[in-house]
Length: 144
Image (cartoon, rainbow, N blue to C red; front, side):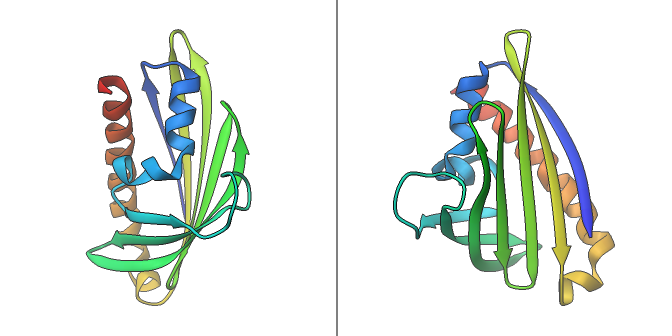
């Protein structure tokens, strides 16, 4: 089991940051593991909404499903990704700090198969990837 925590301070109001992050259509703009998402359940996006996902991890294309597991406007959003032998849970919380927003990200992964054999290496790669993702998120929001 991989369990990692990250944080970044973004110089934008909490409403802007949450709206961008909680919109699955934006995920591929800041999360390098996500190639594309396609909503498969009808209606507005919220807890329980499911998406067909295409991602890339450790040089491998991975197709699966993503479901929104938490959606508390301007406070918290969560996603569970089931792709092949991999299950990943991402939980993001948002807090106003001065004129900006502190984003805290918890990533939990439960690798299986070939990924289980390389769990130690994978944890390091996931850590590096998530740090890069948060840097991209900060850049997207502060420059956009």
